[in-house]
Length: 136
Image (cartoon, rainbow, N blue to C red; front, side, top):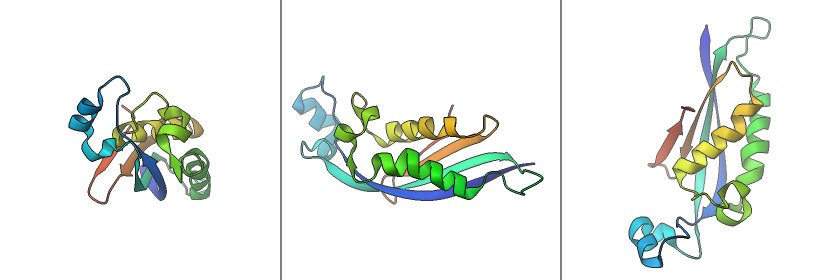
């Protein structure tokens, strides 16, 4: 019997959306105020959902403390109160859009889980703008 369990987390981070190979004008045209050379920030909300079989011994799909610790180590410690463009290696050459951030988070968490688990990451950049990545 497959069940999905989810944990919410959050982190605050700054970023700038731009491409180094584009002119300032083209970056402004495509990314608007998100291209601010002095960066801007978001209070990101994260939902990590793990789907798997219920363990017959524990009754858990995954121990939520284990999931909490994975999220803290792989996401919160790595991203919280950071400038994503400058301080997070994954974004050195990758534009830190919500779409790219959610894929990076997925790729950081997935290897820490049992291979039999399915993972879905939802990232809210604002209360109304969010992205979801199920790993496919």
